[in-house]
Image 1 (cartoon, rainbow, N blue to C red):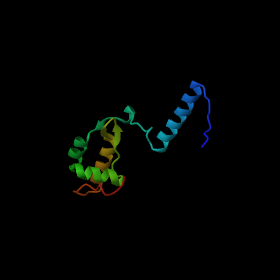
Image 2: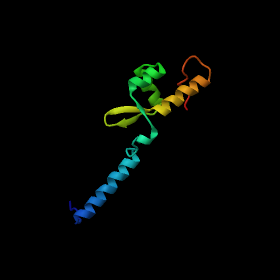
Image 3: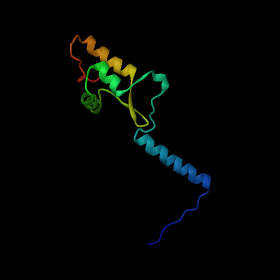
Image 4: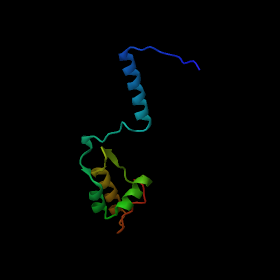
Length: 104
């Protein structure tokens, strides 16, 4: 089997690798980083306390798309604004039970 060889300058190789990495990151949503402008961040424990739910329920609601988690390193953090909006929408429904089954 004969292979084809391509000679590149180091700068060209860096550019090609950078473009490939950016394309893969964009395809898999890895470029989305929570910004500090969005406000405060809550941990899993804080979200569960605020919504009166268990870690398992929080995990299930993440998978259902009700609550969005943001990865920061190895930690899952949640936008305080998003969690407050979910909490407020449940209160507005007048239900004494949190309506997390409804997507917001």
